[in-house]
Amino acid sequence: MTSTFIVEDLCCANCAAKIERLLSEHPDVEAAELTFTIRRLKITADDPEALLPELTALARTIEPDVTFLPEKKRETH
Image (cartoon, rainbow, N blue to C red):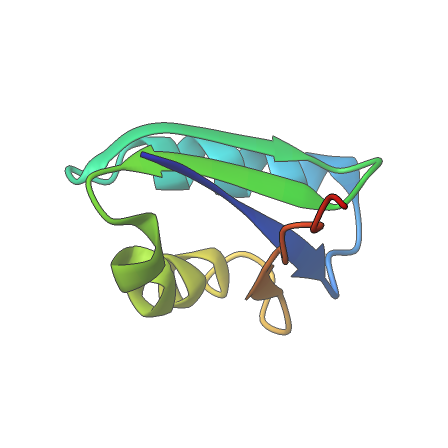
């Protein structure tokens, strides 16, 4: 399953690349893609939302104030 998160308080593209690499190395993460320009993180794992606290803690070793918020799905009418 892939979930997308809004990324807040990320200062630069270099930090984004470091965080993406770190999250990709997590044993429960199949794939991680962090796009600095649009402030989005895509995580592919069995249950990405359950991993969010752990992934946030890892990311904060690089960027202390970074936050990941679940992206709300838009309803179509």
